[in-house]
Image 1 (cartoon, one colour):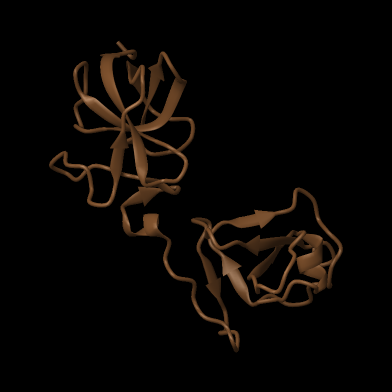
Image 2 (spheres, rainbow, N blue to C red):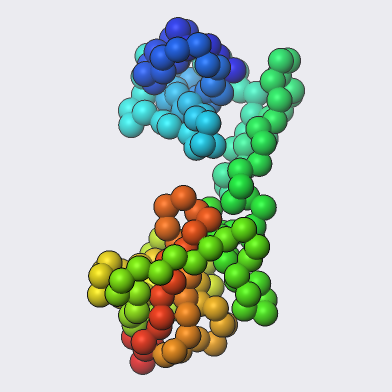
Length: 180
């Protein structure tokens, strides 16, 4: 943890007295990239290395799946509370909104917007998740990733498409399969 006013905090533009977690990344110890954990649970990382203290040792490893594991506990720190979406099954941060019997998971909601219908096709460029599909919606263009309510989906079925904020999904009425 660092306090704004120290070099890493100034480099990321923080103001005030609130303490933030700062993560240093980078291939070379002389030029770390500083990432600051904000209250929403996401890190803000500068687009290029910034000036700051030289990194001489490491105290954590970052696994291929993105999990950060401390090699030693840091005095005066504590684990962050899980984010609301982390309690749901998810792939790359995208929630699987349906239970195995096709019910919307508790705590999630479907939002209906004008023009909420479209043709869909298997796969999503946003996430390498075999359950995800993409839909072409007249009012939005392409919506992805979307998750059909049924494993074998087709015209007349419903898909839930991810939206910013994570716990609400756009309801899409599938009008056809664009793969066929």
